[in-house]
Length: 224
Length: 224
DNA sequence: TGTACATCAGTGAACGCGCGTTCACTGATGTAC
DNA sequence: TGTACATCAGTGAACGCGCGTTCACTGATGTAC
Image 1 (spheres, each protein chain N blue to C red):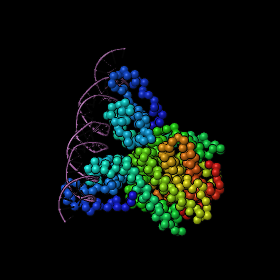
Image 2: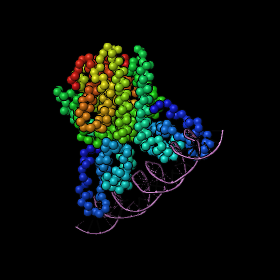
Image 3: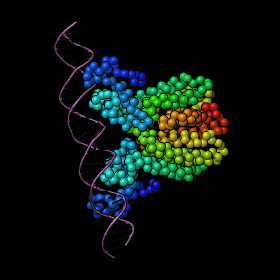
Image 4: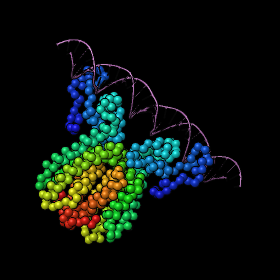
């Protein structure tokens, strides 16, 4: 499950058109990358047809079945890639954070940068969480769950470093994750010049959650 | 645009089957309510076909065009209903709030109650915000924007009553709105016995945002 | 009260299309001898 | 090194289906006289 090589050309043996009508080898990754090129601001994975993906991959429709049982299986594979991609992005941001630029801000900026870079995997994850088959929705939840776990660890570390506590770290992480996904999804549709201010706003919102959690921990506030 | 009467039977003149093959009058609302009965946990409005809706409404497919230009126009009409429904629910909750039960908690509970009651309009609004045509997404944004405005007024009133301030009231309202939508959408898929705890969690998350906003206002915290 | 007429929400039939899926096939690759 | 063979990712053709959309139509309703 390596997210790399998705856009790499087919195996060297395959191209050169020497064999007349037939591809020597079409890999699973070729189909995945074909699906990704089709996904865009107005095309979610659930609107793609099997034939469309096969066409984009340069493959007969029935060849699709050699690699995936159906479109749902492809969608789930894509979501798993998207999840690890997202975690990779934030994992990097975590290391870039310094005393100057807080973890919150660095992470939000890294996230938005990737969004601006038109990362199709990220688009998918943000946009499609609430539609599709049960299996698909479960796959999305699983990836967001992974992300929440890593974020929670980050937040706890951050709080310890600041000598504060967190009220319900797991919930704090979940709130941040879901908010970022929701805002990210709407930001995708904004014209580029409005995205910078969306980044600012998102950073403030995330900060509200962090500060709220810290304050509630400090005051032992339970009345809700 | 009244959300009532959607499930009412057709006009008295229409039924009774006296006219052999033809409905005397099919109203716009009949088509809307047919679409609503088709929407469910695994059917979003974007997966409905024109013929399917017409069939459910007991109408020839081409009759659809007498009322809507296309499915997108129907979807937008549904979203507008959903928005006013949501605002109605929270508007009521606002009045139910007492000193005993905070506005936050009352509102979250009212929201979740409506969700449990299988309100199809609410399902739509929560689930479909990120997919569909540009016009559709804009319609969703517009409804959520209305909601944010009302929520912001509420929050300001609440803060004044508590003799505290709010940091960026508009952003606070937006963060809460988007979080509630996101959590609500995933809660829809939970088995009923897990929904109570989801309600608790959501109330805590919203409280974090409110407390964070108040704390940031109080401390004049700007370092983000 | 009756009659003639315009309106327009309904109709059934038909169209061409892209879809998912199946079938029996083919031929390049890798392996065994 | 050559030959025979199994494997299996690819193929083209065909299927039946539901779709959106169009057409010319019909007949109930409301209005004018």
